[in-house]
Image (tube, rainbow, N blue to C red; front, side, top):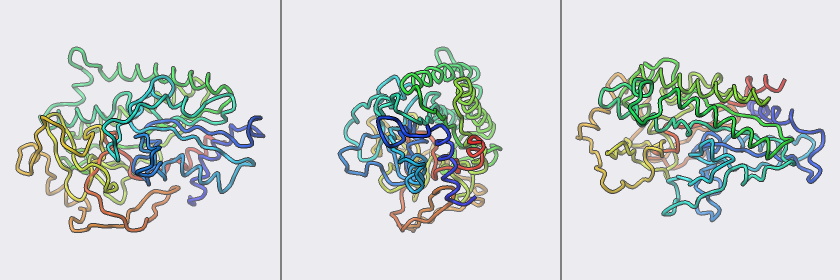
Length: 405
């Protein structure tokens, strides 16, 4: 599909719900983009607002996130009237942060001692009867999927079963069925709140891409650029959890008569365990700009990502500095040695060049990979979900066009 048509696809979905004329109070269509880091973008582009800007709020929105790409397309080809985007998505957001609760942003980038709390996204975006379209991509942090991945790594390092832990949880811990049931209830509440706040708006929900492989054996045990110590059977089980999450979002959206955008189907085969040139999602350590942290914090242990990568899981790392009372792992420590890639793992992957200080960064823009100017090569970095997109997924393509029919 041509790049322009790819970006236009979600634009078509947006516009099918817009009135023939813009709201009476304005000449522009009003679009609010709400959600978590998979909406905000995190490190698929340059920070919005830019580093050092006093308006930075710790939410890590970026250029090349899907709201930004679609907004660019709509600016070039306006649907009769201009479209005004209010993007208040925020890395680390849970469902409750969309319309109910304040959020304390957690960005480790350009951070003060503590980010000020931000109001619910629906409030910040000013949802009202004049809002024409609302897009929502949220739910993963409410499981929390990042926390589950961290637990699975901890259990994997000790030879334990992640699936067993969540299907037969210890006393006082929420099992997976309870988590999914809670997500369903919370999603019902958030869509009801959004419809109340923007009663005439078209509401579009966006699911999650295929961050895990169709076959857990695609993941190389011990590879920091993938899932480290999560066993193959547990990877397969976690993929099922993500599919259940997407299914729940789709089911609740259908109940409200809203449109659900499936970004999973078109991203299969581009998960965190694929070779560098094929993956759209980074593993625990991966490509990111040089201002991202370079350490992963596991329970009781801080481990540096191998050069030249950076951590992609702020849920695990928090800050680039090691916190008090944590021991830093060295290359000779047992935990570090246990997580080293095997020879077979490194041979089947394209290893990064440790001598390169700069490189051309390939980014996903409108459904195609493009090459940016030479930028500083990162050490490994982390993002607000344990594994995260490295490109904006090909989510503006055929499945979305089908929804517009």
